[in-house]
Amino acid sequence: MGKRPLGANISHMLKARGVDVIFGIPGVHNIELYRGIEEAGITHVLPRHEQGAGFMADGYARATGKPGVAYVITGPGLCNIMTAMGQAYSDSVPMLVVSSCLETKDRHIGRGRLHEMRDQEGAAATVCDWSVTAPDAPAAYRLIDKAFAEFSATRARPKHIQVPIDVLGSPADPAPDQPIAPAKPVARPEDVAAAAEWLLGARRPLFIFGGGAAQGFEAARKLVRLTRAATMCSFAGRGIIAPDYPLNYGPCLARGDSVAELAKADLVLCIGTELSETDIWRDDLGYDAPMIRVDIDAHSLADDHVADLPIMGDAAVFLSDLCDLVEGHNVTSDWMAKEVADAKAAFHAETDAARQGIVPICAAMEQVLPKGTLIYSDMTQFAYVSKELYPLDRPNLWHHPYGFGTLGYALPAAIGGKIGKPGTPVVAIAGDYGFHYTMQELGVAVELGLSLPIILWDNGKLKEIEDSMIASQIAPNAVVARNPDFCALARAFGAGAEKPETPEEFKQVLQVALKAKGPTLIHVTPDCFL
Image (tube, rainbow, N blue to C red; front, side, top):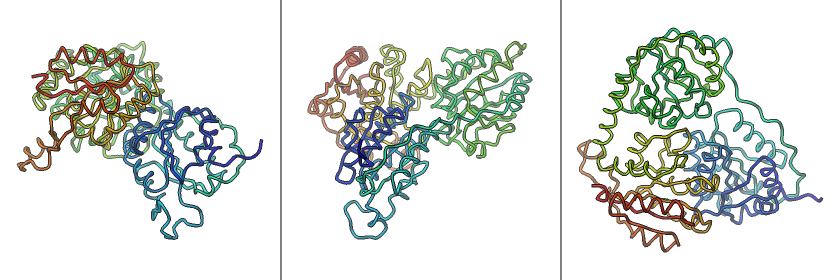
């Protein structure tokens, strides 16, 4: 076989590394990347905007655990996907963005070329783990394998590889065989032994689980039963501990009164959590006990939440090893189920009071959605309430733009999730304003015939911002935007559309939408649940 252009070889290489789907938009500068997609046997999904491509890749990665891959053009194409890259960075999502860049002779010269940027590589570097230019085929192959090795062995974060237009079109030898993937680091036995000693000596141990512990949820559940420990979790850690475990406080860290519950602990164990601002919404976690902290990321172990026993290693392996050391020991715990239940009831009442009228729709969803449903939510008050109250029987079911907090995430991410898990129920939840950001991706869901209910929470304004302005004694300003007839808009794309008037109608519509042969917009207004 003669040499293929490098762009074609890249697609073949990605297929050999397990990539089955690429999200992207072709343009004059990256068409060589498209030469090999079909031949390699990869499915290509055409979004309506590069931001949508990035969110689809993100949603696909969260659903499957495999890296989401996107192809974009030089300049504006890369700029448009950078918001999604920033979201993937903050939420530890494996994403590989491959873009073109100006020809080698034109880079950094300032000749006024099409799509020219002063520093495209540097711009992308601000929102991803690394952004590197591949000057030739061997470098491109090494960078792709470097990305996949890091996805396998370190904290998953997006990477960007750009290839000059002339290099993409140049004949190149095929990519080398896939190297053996490195494993994640594991905690030292002496560190696990120390953690076991501390845990067995505690009377009120309290675990805080983050998204980094999701793969170890079975060991986590066994461990808390063995030790009769209380548990809390970040929003990303929901479902790690079963919602009916009697000592599970749930995702209450952002509640101010959670400090009083943390103060009851005589040992705090933080497993796979960054304890970021969006996890706790205060400067300090608020506890007065020794802390054990386990994380795969050394940066997290060296941040403001200083642990008495920091442990570097994969959370899932650590939890399993710790289980082995504590099993068979007699454990005395002073935690009482009633104190946890009383605190949870108070937290839930606060949530309902802060954003009234949303709890009933959460309850209606819970009654209808099958177990194992994947839910993708946007930055909307509906999601803020739901992610505190909606029970999850296992982790990695509810996906939200936690850290970066971008609008427009839900619909394209849910499309990516449904593509990755076609046999699994998937639901998108968006607010009326955020839906404007990416509503054009309805066209993709229609084209692909995706069974996808899209619950649109329409309160006619940026209600969370209005509430914040009022709380800050600022006269509400710029918080109302004219909305279209959302149902007519959805039908214009070829999607189904319903506007239920009662909670019972909502449940019926949602049940039908789960079985439809295409997407269904479910337009819900607050008066439906009053």
